[in-house]
Length: 462
Image (tube, rainbow, N blue to C red; front, top):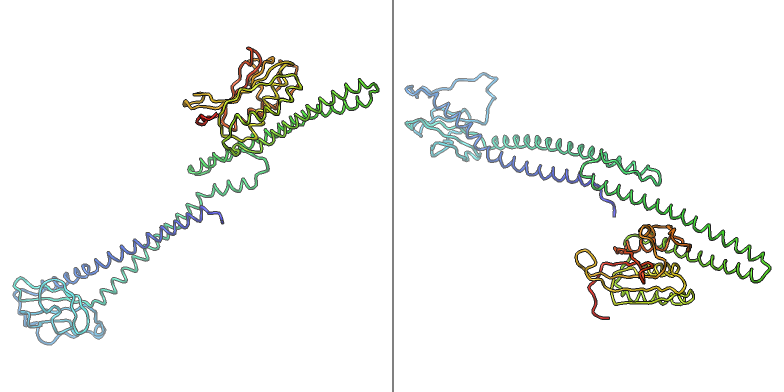
């Protein structure tokens, strides 16, 4: 589908509005002219009739009008206008009239006022006026064809004037539209020629006020994109730095194992090599998880899932790991439902469990809980929670916020970590609109992480 142009739409609107107004104005002009044409001509005929009537002497001898008429110069003999007059005496005798004009009364009833009549096959507009005695009557007539011609001429003039005026208005509006959209075109050209990864905000000063919200939103998008790309650059740099150390260690341990002649020393070197491989594997998994979550965006596909089932599945995966590392793993799971991305919740719980297992000493305990927390969220709504607690050395209060930042390592423990696991937890919680609470763990020591999800209505089925 071809993109719609604001300029084309505005021009079409201008043309349409101009055409509508032109039609309305022309209709009004024609109606007004048609209505007024008769009255205008009637006023003209009335003026001539009354002037001619008062020009007749009241005490004069009207018979003087009878007899031969004056002759006209040759130059005026051919001048014959459409306007004719008649002077009647006692409504029966034609005293004077226009030479060549009708001999019969223009208005047979001799009533005063205007009237349309047909004489000798032609339509006339007639005005009749009598003196106060009613003896003398003056009738002035004009051909209707002249009146119609005058109407057409006047209507054409007014329509032409109106059309020219509306065309001027339309052209001015088009010019104003062109000038108003010039800053928009300038912004488009500037964006087209802008270098790659140039996220400088677009200027708002030259743009129309109506476009400021749109451009401001676009500038916010540019800022978010710049922050995202900068974050990915930092992540790649930090990941490369984190991988460089275990890879160097792998190479060093492998060289040591090759050089050792004593089997016990060789086995010790291989065990160290295996530990480094396991750490590198874990780091790679976390980096892949981080890349997957970053690529999935802020709106992953959500489905309704039973949190107890998800938690039990992940706990089952860690039972062998806990046994091999001499840790005790306990569960206290209650039925609760959340809207979530199942894979991401699995990543979240695995990182919490792995973190607790690594930082808990030999013989320590880790507990996984889930269920409903009434009125834990704003507005008094119920909420689902997922919690992992241990009895390890714990985390100082001053570091509890910092440990959820990417590549942060606690200075209060000797355990080596990548600093990615808890940052993954924070990212997944944020994408699910969940909150994270931290507290002291089991037996008044250790560390507890509780993730609280916006709750659904509690299910009574256990």
